[in-house]
Image (cartoon, rainbow, N blue to C red; front, side, top):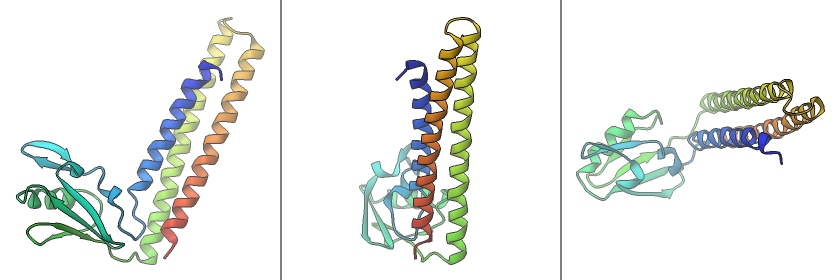
Length: 184
């Protein structure tokens, strides 16, 4: 693989990974501890990832339990979850924080499916922008005489093939996540 193309392929890979990380945060009606990955808790004045202040467990498919290592962190954890956009109200028993996931309504499932498609489209736009940047760079070096016109065209063709591959991967990921969200 040409190193001139490799850097654009790496950027496309990062875009795909970013979209997949976003998908992890979209809940599909069952408890997934990864929904808490982006939540930070004020731990003695320092924003700290929730995973570092307590033990997170999933005792059943509809519930996540967070057992803080320090009992006084219960209120901070609750505050952080309420401030986040996960849409679930935490409850506590003095020692643990519980998140109970309600059944998703058909309407909510459709909203989530739309959100998945929108994030997929955003990722495709990012991929196409990376392709455009690459092709522009190849045209510039061909015009400057650093490579032949044919070599420039070959690089553009390779860039298009890589772009098509990533678009297919995005479509597949969107389809899988949509299916997961719509499954009752």
